[in-house]
Each structure stands twice: as C-alpha cells, then as structure tokens.
Length: 248
Image (cartoon, rainbow, N blue to C red; front, side):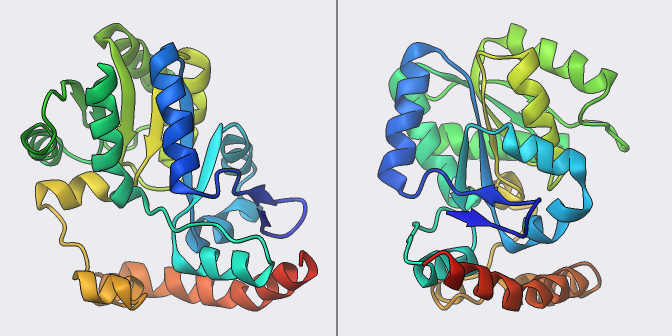
C-alpha cells in the first residue's frame, strides 16, 4: 500500500512479519545485503519536504509499518498490513542472525548505549556475535566522507546485519548509502531501539503500547521535542484518511 501525497508517496512493500523474516532469512543465507525501513507518521511529515530522504526511502528493499496509524490506514484502504515497530524487530532479527551465522554491527547515539545494547543482545540471544559498534561524532553526515569511511570499516568487520539507531532521516540516508558501499550488509533502521535495550531510554509500558498510547508516553517524557512532532503528525492524518479511502 502507498502512503503520503504525490509525488512523495512511499509504499509498505512487506505487509506481514512472516514475509519479512522469510525475506531476511533468504538474504542472510545468500550473504546478500538489504535495507529495511520502518514507516511511521513522523516520516510521512518529513518526506515531502526532504527530497534526499525520499530518495533514500525509495532505495530501501523492504518497508514495514511502524506505528498503529499506518496499520489503521491500511485497513481503511482494504490493504491491511501488520504492525512491526523497529524496536520489536531487534531481538527476532538477532535470533535469525545467530541461527544463520550472521554477525552483527550496532551504530547509534553513544558508546555507552551501544555497549549496553550489545551486552543485552548477546545475553538474550545464544550464539549471537556483535563484531562492530560505532557511535558517530556530533554533526555526522550520513552521506559524507565519514559515512563512507564507516561503511568501509563495517564491511571489513564481517558483519552481515547492521542496526542503525540514529533517528530519521539520518539512519535511512546512511542505509541507502550502505546499499551502494557495503552491498553484503543488511541495514535495519530501528530508531531508539538500542537505547531501550541498554536502558538509556525507557520505553512505554506494555499496557500503553497495547492501547496505542506509546505516543503519549513519549510526549510526556520529552514534551519540547515530541509535542511539535506529534502535532505535525496529527495535522496530516485527515489527508491520509482521504487517500486511504481512495485506495479501497
């Protein structure tokens, strides 16, 4: 299903968890790379205003639904997709990596958060090898010379799966460049997922997630940053509803 307004539309092209993990298993077995993006309303507010972000999104092999509004809109359009938040994909992807002998890299906000996440992942996933971690310096350009050097380092590490926790649009821009410079690596953009694992950020309680209130939890945790973001998200919803109805 397509989301957004022309000419800035993007499609969720992997509608189910089963389909995602089948595709990723095939990639791991073939030692072939990929880029996985997790679409949410915040991304849809940025895509029309950022041509580079849009181009990077369209360079991704797999796009899944991260956020209940995306799922609700898909049902309204009669083209339902399953909810697959990036944070919830980390452990299952690590289990699949361990099973297929695929080594893992972590790229994110700080060395402390990445080391904590690596310890959590290896402690919870038997046989998992985290062979590379890197926290880019402040002002990191995800498509510049430093990014290219990092991708060369990443490819040399032997990692076949790289979790990118840099936030949008940096993580998607970096993944798109990675498809060119490190074609044997699978890139998964997972937002704050590694910070949740390391304890550097606290995720919303499960009951709030079940009630589709994770956005409220995040707004209360960081109102100055998150309230304007969610206001933009709510503002585009009416247009997305109309678009979904037209796709029925």
